[in-house]
Length: 120
Image (cartoon, rainbow, N blue to C red):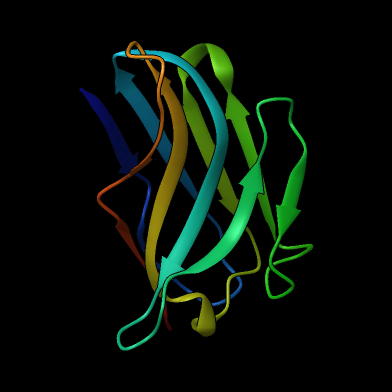
């Protein structure tokens, strides 16, 4: 069994910063790509940022230059540093990880989501 547990969401003023964390635990052999998505009511989940096991990153145009994704492979953890936050960044943020389990099958796992609200 594998679990992804997120933390770090909350309420922040426009221009502020937050750091999200997502830790994977359980029957893990290795973790391939790790991603952050976000979703607002009535909309599809959108990809915010992704990072490969080797550290290559990609970002949605809307967050480039403001958000930074990173990971600690030893701790099976992915981070999302969010700076210069805007009200339109308000959403539930989810992490996703492609995990090779002890059954030697790669499966996508999702975290439970954490609310980020940007408001004055």
